Each structure stands twice: as C-alpha cells, then as structure tokens.
Image (spheres, rainbow, N blue to C red):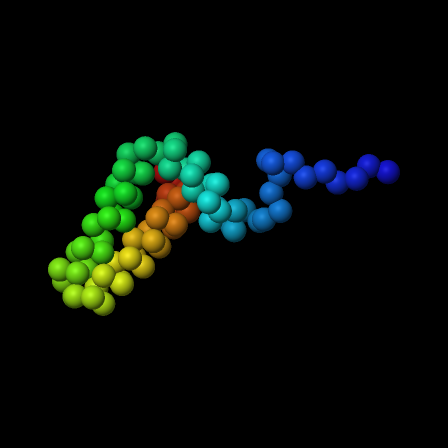
Length: 82
C-alpha cells in the first residue's frame, strides 16, 4: 500500500484560505513590485494620516487599515482580475 507523502507544493488548505498565507502574499508581492512599493507607502503613511486627522484613535485605525490592506490586496487583485 502506498502512503500519502506531503510535498512542499501540496497544500492542506482550500484555495480561499491559501490566498491569505504568508507564502502566497510574499509570492504575490515579489511578482508585483510596483504594487508592493505602493503598499509600503500605505503601511507607513496611514498611521501618520490617522494621527493628523483624528489623533491617537486615528493612529490605531490607520494601523488596522494598513494591515488589512496589506493582507487583502492579493485576494482583491485576483478577484478584480489583475
């Protein structure tokens, strides 16, 4: 009887959750350099923009929004067909 062998390219996750993995995000941003630079700008600027607009609460919201944008951008990009 042949046993199941897990290889690096096989995934135990479904496609929906695999798109949120760190490996898939890294691969996406390596393939889309200009989008990666834009996301770096968003991640660094959003907390400061929040500080300017709404104070300390704005910083927290800016950090949450920038983190969500970083994680969700590859999925949204695939969804819109980019």
